[in-house]
Image (cartoon, rainbow over all chains, first blue to last red; front, top):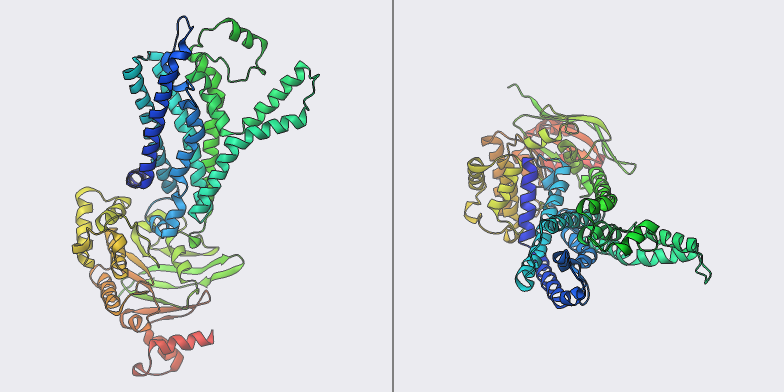
Amino acid sequence: MQRLKVIIRKELADHFSSYRFAIIFALIAMVSLITAYMVGLNIRKELEGVAKPQFIFLMLFTSTGAIFSLVQFVAFFGPLVGLILGFDTINRERNEGTLSKLLSQPIYRDTVINGKFLAGVVMITVMMVSIVSVITGLGLIVLGIVPGVEELLRIFIYLIISIIYISFWLGIAILFSILFRSTATSALAALAVWIFFSFFVSIGANILANALTPETELASADDIFWRAKVVKAFTLTSPMELYTDATATIIDPMRKSARSIVTMGPMESFSMSRFAGPLGLSQSILIVVPYIISLVAITIICFAVSYIVFMRQEIRSL
Amino acid sequence: METQSVINTQELTKIYSGRPAVDRLSFTVNEGEIFGFLGPNGAGKTTTLLMLLGLTEPTSGTAKVLGWDPTREPIKVKSKIGYLQENMGFYSDLDARQMLRFVAELNGFVGNEADERIEGALETVGLADEAAKKIGVYSRGMRQRLGIAELLIKDSQVAFLDEPTLGLDPDATNRMIELIQSLCRDKKITVLLSSHLLHQVQKICHRIGIMIKGRMVAQGPIDQLAKEKFGIGKEAYSLEEIYMKYFQEA
């Protein structure tokens, strides 16, 4: 435990004194200011014609404004932060010859990975909390919106899911830094995985669905339904999709399902159209729990693979 | 004098992709001695050191370091062995004190105890005046001395020095050799030294082992090896001659 703390402290000191931190800090400032600005421009328009708006505060995070909302931004570019923090974790030490020095001290190998991973998680937490705080603060000052207790809770849950999501990418980056000797290779490999899951999976899902159920003019309702299910099932292999679904009903209580309109059951779509009221917090959580669990599971799997690979690696080749 | 073995290996073998890097190695290092570990590049010296540290698992055979099996109890072994590796890596953006503090904390020394150890070690290796500089600007000799300081920070009973004089200028080499002798003499640390500088090895080592192609072809005090090989008295040989003789035979 003591030694784990030593490693975490060393890693945090490294993070905070590196250019990387400056980049991430710039990212934080940019994202929060742009998001707050865009939301400020649009939130009035979105509230027009709404008789008794609820959860306005959450709209700060979900309102798409001119281009994208914070939630979308984190889903797309959050992984990049995880990758930046982790892509050279192990191979940099290996190239500089400090890894075998570290391992010849009386510590276990897993302490090294744990320490580095946890230090990254701390950085991610700092970043997410600051972004959300800045937006919250701007919302309070500029728009004069005050969050309710439930909204704060929802934001808190959203924060936790986001941290897990970005930590998953940190885990991927650390895994690549163990697998590849060169830092450039591991960075590129991690980027490739990110691009694949963030952009190509959804395109691939449509192609797959097309192949399985060719679109015809006389498609029956069943066909359309099945087709939508195929697309959904396939896109769920993407962590981004998992994350979007996991946060969907949490940060946007007006949504009642993580599913798309087509795959909803009749009761769901009925309630969607008849009752415009928000979903209770406990119900929201109930809907997203499977996605959260999947997200945690893939993070653990990725971490486990890192462990196994790192434990079995010969120091000779370090 | 009753001597106790600090390192003891039996038929230690390591096979890398079908080729033995270390082949049925059996040798002993006694407490308080400087053991010279000689052999051409790629003879398996570093692999042997890594196995003794528990960083690499032997394919077969056993090793005992201070009575512990490095494969089973790596933490105990690593807390008592200081390893100065060939091409030592440092965190170049730290200064010497920060680096030593990191090592001290990893070994469980904190607060005042760590401070005392750090200052003591810096004093011993003669880096106290330059401890505030970043390691990135250190010369090779200074880095090697810092490496020795790291051994002193932890409770080393045994030091593994892998090519500690590699690439040093003559002055730095002499300082290093003196430092190694003082480790053995003043700090009572058993030293396992691998080097190609046969003159220096002859000067400071109590016993030597010659390793060629993964096998230990000779071990013992230098005079004894000289007698075995040449059948001659003390004046007529140098370690270099003995080494070359073994090397040509192998």
